[in-house]
Length: 272
Image (tube, rainbow, N blue to C red; front, side, top):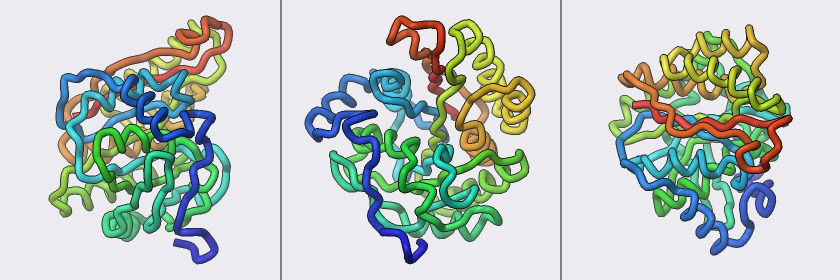
């Protein structure tokens, strides 16, 4: 970790995206968690908006998972801070429901295996896309271990580099690992347009086609913020033997607000 950055990452959207009180947060997550069926998974895609908007989609995904030993979490970089591919290799993330520790060995091994990842906390300090996943992980596992990776837009080749690095380390670890890609879908489009565009992107994801996803998002100007994290997850999971991706739930913010003029899309998928 950069010596100038703290080893303790403080939460930045507590009381905004999710309740700041531990008891209220635990209850909110309990209500959002789906009822299964539970399965082993190699990867998932989950949204990262405020729980009132996207929590149902995320909860349906997390409710279907057999808890792993370590969570590798890939999130998009909304802030522009830090390097293009930033991993934290040590420290803890403070949350209302307790501290979440980084698995330092796995983080260091992934960093060493990739030609692109840089050990930096700067990209993570104000970024919410990984943080909002942590209360769900704490529901699944009493003391979850994470490897947080924050990504700016990347090429297919760059996503493949990181994905194969993750897969190689996961294979050699012998541990049960879940690769989480945190992403919302179309942003601030009319409902019909958002659903049309998101369907194109989801078709590529369900084909486990990371390069196809990135090209579809680019060619159709789809405002999906986490295309790179999802592509990395797909490359990693395919290398680990994934054969299918199932759409668990899709909603838009309009399903919550009743305003369908400008919506954000939220999709949850399980890759196995």
